[in-house]
Amino acid sequence: MSPNISTFAKKLEHTNMQKIIVITGASSGFGKATAQLLSQQGHTVYGLCRRALEDKTIHYLQCDVRNRSQVAAAVEKIVGEQGRVDVLVNNAGMGIGGALELATEEEIDLQMGTNFMGCVNMCQAVLPYMRKQRSGKIINLSSIGGLMGLPYQGFYSASKFAIEGFTEALAAEVTRFGIRVCMVEPGDFATGFTGSRRNSQPSLEDADYGPVFKNTLAIIEKEENGGLQPEVLARRIAKLVEMKRPPLRNVVANLEQWLSTVIKRILSGNQMVAILRDYYKS
Image (cartoon, rainbow, N blue to C red; front, top):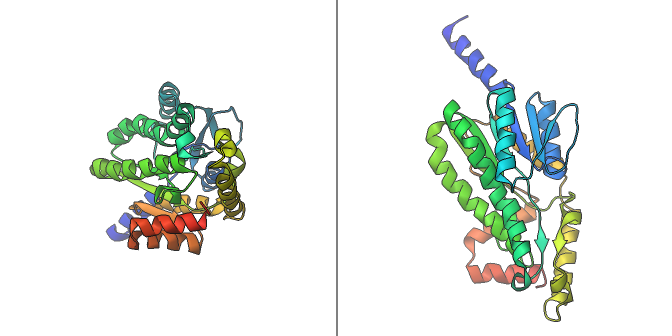
């Protein structure tokens, strides 16, 4: 075998080799679809979720990403069994709907703790191992709601805006260790996220906010229920897993929503707020 062919064969073998992949929020929606697809592709997949699950192809571990001790124990167990972590997909998330003014401290802590601090906890747990092995990939789930503030989903947007800044800074810090960091920004998808959203009762009952919030919520739910299927996002994540240098930002949405992210970069802040107010009838 010639040197060139031998080098190509080694690169091909490395590209196609089985990876040790950790996915949070893997019990449903994006996480489950992604875990199933990557497992089918021959990777070893560990799915972290809050409830105990059993599956013949996915190694499920019970773990609340808000709990740093549970996160550390889960990652230590995975490294103990496999010797490494090649890819982390930070997917765990939830949504709380309601007026920002009326959000309770408990709701804010739950929203930010799950979506943002859960991502931070997982990254801080795997990074020491990735630095030691001088390789790895972290894929953080943001949202189009992390590119523009969505009315009556304000703290959800805030948690995703936080992921945007965190991911960009993290990429700048760890690329020199051979670790690649990127994020995926989904638009509306038809998943269980819609049905599990927690809506603020004080917001629904408030004389000023209630009627508008109900109208906006109806628009949001209609868009989500008519959105793309989670398998679409799973396929994009699977491509990012295989890419040597994935783009930092990856919008996955229908054409209209993708265009909205382009328009956001062109218009003034006031113009974008006016468009959002009109679209969501807020």
